[in-house]
Image (cartoon, rainbow, N blue to C red; front, top):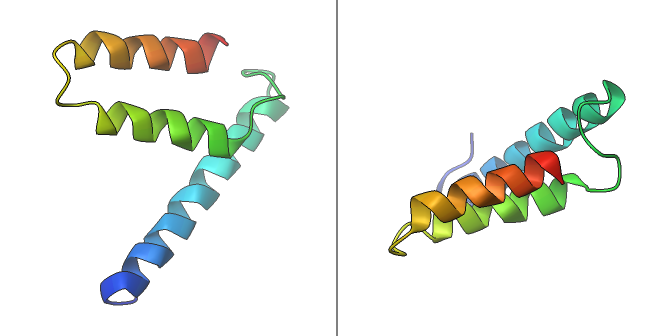
Length: 71
């Protein structure tokens, strides 16, 4: 693995590829919709992580997860 900012870039690419693979597999299995890409899923997950200091962050995080999973 790279060092410094290179490690961050490499880790970001690896995470995006993992999410892309998971989304593709779930679409293929018919478990999730086929009109939402990995980038949207990653943005939703980022939003959950970024909202940790909000008063009702846990309930909001659960709502975002439900939205992502159920459409």
